[in-house]
Length: 199
Image (tube, rainbow, N blue to C red; front, side):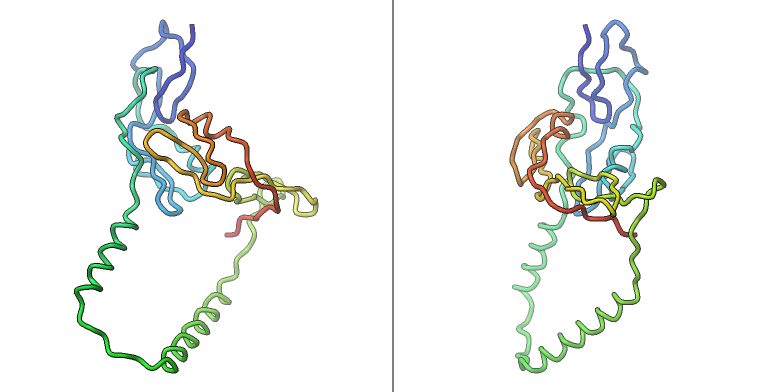
């Protein structure tokens, strides 16, 4: 009778009679989802594309297990909130700043905006084209290749993936799952246009 392995990066069906110390290739560390970065703490590899994250090779070998693995602990936590609180504390303890005239402030902001627009104009972004001559959609839940000359609809998740304790869901549709494979199969909840990947 086959059982499904619970280790991250494996999740394969196995027969206990054939289980051994080299049967399971997996990630013993924590999955990282911080800002746009994705990766595993155990193999110290960071990517930005979801497909590339799913293709990261497991870095450990061992036996399959049908027991929920806790060796990786909870998901890697971003330092964004902690850093923001430090900024608030530093501001509260800093000396009062001199009052600035609104006209001076508006003038400085206009100059900054103009400089930023000039810098952005110098960076010419190009749309990524696959070897098949198609564009690749970057909408979450889609990530498909498509022909820009064909009017195809995009089915995607407008929200963000959320990983809390053992629960996995999208903020836009909140269908909660505990198994990674089931999370990946959650149907998309929005329809619109593809967003091409730029490089």
